[in-house]
Length: 415
Image 1 (spheres, rainbow, N blue to C red):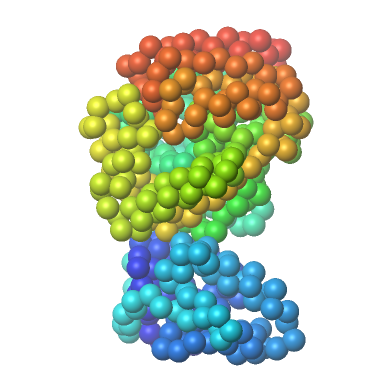
Image 2 (image 1 turned 180 degrees about the vertical axis):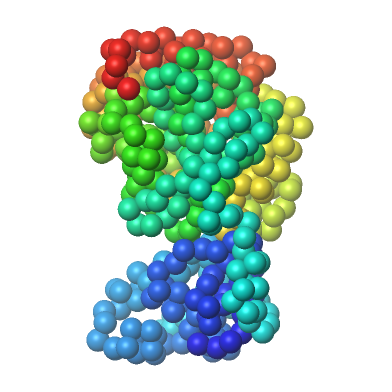
């Protein structure tokens, strides 16, 4: 491989040091996927045939085309691309593939300089303390990804799944989130974390539901928890449902707020709904890739429909500081196609489902569907329009009362 670094979009590809960075932060990527990306970038002036890729990257033309297709999809996921969008890699029917993104080339920095350029997350750090006196720790998943986690408060445990965006050293003191910490730690110990691809955890790409389950396993193990109640809010809801079904011995109670079983594309009932969901996703992805405030502001308004525009702007700012545009776009696309209906049918623990009646982001019908799928569940509907509850709306104290009353039903000593 060459001694040059390639810059495209928000990515820096350094073949000589085996490193891919997104927004100057290193990304974990499998060696063969990295080699495939390098070959396409280095030969971006032409279409590369499948046979050439198999012979050069795999060293054999007898590897199946299916293996190449799978690897190519992984490359696209890693850089926030899809076979449909083809922003970076174009499929030329009957001929092969070509890397088409605008690319600049620069001499590769020395190893020490390259390392200095990617120290946004202190890899060597074991723990750090925020201004709110929370200690942020790090653990490793089964596949070696570093995940940041923290404990707030004291008492029986309550684990909150990671959702949509998280940045533990920011959200603890941000006005739009502080009431969650104050409310959830009322006589409880809240365990939270940044999932892979976000915040202080490793910014891997192409993550899946299985890998999100691994993240939660690692955090629960690091916190020394055998059995615990689990809270899933918004996009953290499907993960909480899947985890409760896959790990029934660990989850004692399940609380779901603003959650769903099927993402917007997965739940489309006809062509019109599918087209509408697809358009919404494309607009959001366009905003993420362009880092356009108008798109992201619209997205924020769906989370805080009952709040003033200032809250939308705060949410937009938080998004930009929590995740790269490529990871944010990939997460949205993955979530829109997620379907945990089968997992929901297998949930056996007592479950509380709380949802705002006029939630514009996730319709109340999704809460009703969850209540129908989960056998031992109860549904509580709140008056309000916010997808994420705010401290100044009447629904917030009602939510806390329902949550703590539900947790109080748990037998003593089960945490």
